[in-house]
Picture 1: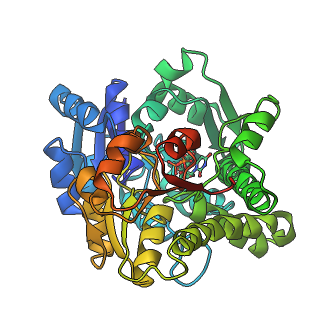
Picture 2: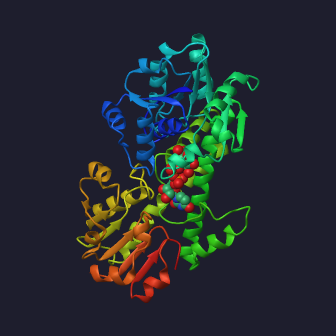
Picture 3: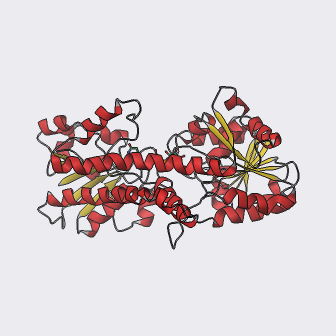
Length: 434
Ligand code: UGA
């Protein structure tokens, strides 16, 4: 099938490469010439495991190309919209500038028989508005949200746990048939496929992210209570997680959630709910956001306490900058914020991350960066683990002790074994644990 993907960021670039790997003829469009040049050269513009290989295979097959020119999409039958919907500069709502710009550029090329399939995360009501705006072209619109996780983006795109199609009219079989043709190989594996209306499809996406964010903030709220009562939040999570109605996933307490999705999506959902008169229904999401942001400060506080309240000139190794492992994404990263706050308190911060230093040093040039884990640890008076990369989880307490100036470790993700570190004479502190 001939398809186009408008927007080649963390969603669109992956979607374009993944669609080519499913056998489709794909053109990816982006307004950013440098990004298009990189993609055309087979280089992923951001760190995502498996993306480079998938891109290069697609380019070599001749079924994948990238362009800045919308005229190149003329032959495509399905046009995916995969542009970003960041938080507005002046409020909590989603900024739809990129969606509207993509639709405006696409419009002259639309004609009868084509389907525009929105993948971007949008406020409920957006699909209906956009469908109205293109109705006169004869093209139709579906909302087909994406549930990929960074770090697993290629796998999640070619092997999703469900497909959701929001269509204008549940009886309009042509739109469903076009999407079924795109996802034929996925559907063959009996992947659940839900066909619904626009509003439900839009809400599936934001409510899924709101639920995940709530689950994380729930366990982080328990971490706050555990800190006061001497309880252990990790044991608590294990114990409640055995209840299959609750489940252990997304119950890892620590510095909380970040990234380009969960934080801005719960804020945009709250803003949209207020606009439509349902503010009370999701008012709890403000608490979810606040609990999440409090954990960053809590970690900074316990590190500072270990220096009797004054971290000035103390050398602190911050392990991790990305919002999660296997990503170089620093958008709303708890790790980067912890590093920045410690720096503001006068600490001599030396941060290390296997992938995110180029991005972090652009936005936070004031921080110190190490070119290796060992050099970050050397001479450190406190080690603060904030992104659980494998090499940090696997740190050996004895070997680490040989590098640092003081055996003091802060486990911001609850991934180390406290007994192992304490038995090697470390002072081990974590969030939500005695
Ligand atoms: C999230 C959703 O998981 C995807 O399903 C969704 O498609 C995506 O947003 C999106 O809207 O595009 P992602 O942002 O890649 O995916 O990251 P997650 O794996 O959800 O992690 C989000 C944050 O929560 C990370 O900072 C992570 O460290 C944190 N987290 C996760 C916890 O603090 N505790 C946990 O138990 C799990």
